[in-house]
Length: 111
Image (cartoon, one colour):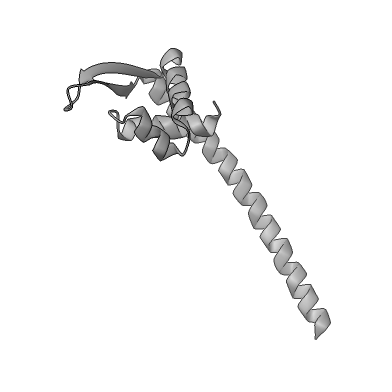
């Protein structure tokens, strides 16, 4: 499971602990099997705790709660994601400035 998927899943569970795996798979844009696999990995890692409860349809359901280590993991992943996106942003700004200069140079030679 990559860090971005891990972070998205932790955020989704934090926002809606009673979401079903089917709802999570739709929200994250992944298959039900992948959602199940990723969720199980978080439970096995100790980042998420699954509690059973009876839902309104009288079926067994789960509440997925972030553990203290899950909250720490989410914070760490958020910081790493932000750092990576800021680096991408800086590179993109440089590329845009180079393209602007190329366009300006091309326009000045045409005139």
